[in-house]
Image 1 (cartoon, rainbow, N blue to C red):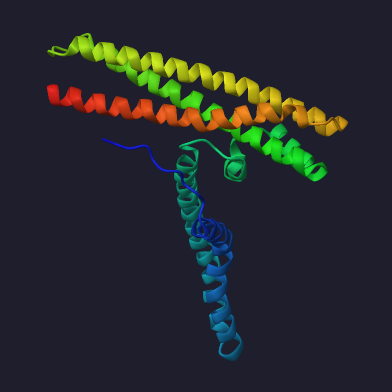
Image 2: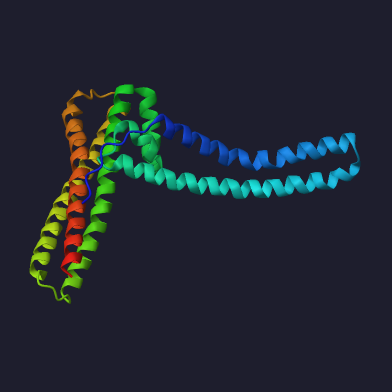
Length: 250
């Protein structure tokens, strides 16, 4: 039986690793050919021109090896970042975590965030908070869709299964579908609210509107962004338990 995962916070180790992977991916195509090139260059000066050919070959070979190593680091960083984002999003994305999900923002959202934070820090914080809610609701809607497809697939298989508790399993899966439908509806509602709130903040930043009237709505979005992921994880956990019970019954 799995338990809901505790809140994950980005550590200094995570920040250091991310920086090291980025620097490594950029610098390896330069460093790897540079070191042997320096060695052969010195040998060519103090020794014989015969070292010029190894110099050229070392530069070319080092650059190719550097590119391959750089690609490997980039792939490793991409996988590591994906795992990190999943841990961060497990109970809802927070405003200070939006930086890790920048690739999931639209071009317009990125531009608006930069402009608003430059003009007004308060509105910038509110915009980040709402972006976090938008990202959370989008991820939940996508995850719920996948879970519903799995449940429907299992329901289809049960039609041809011959087990003693098949009716109970069908009822339990039907309950799962109801829960997932409710979570999906709440996620879509939160997505609509967050998108509307983003437009309100953009207008407030553009026209200098007082933003105090939206504080309550932002708190509501923040609360939803924390509750929905936990509800989805609970539904997933129940489904895993159900799979174990079904496997044991067979």
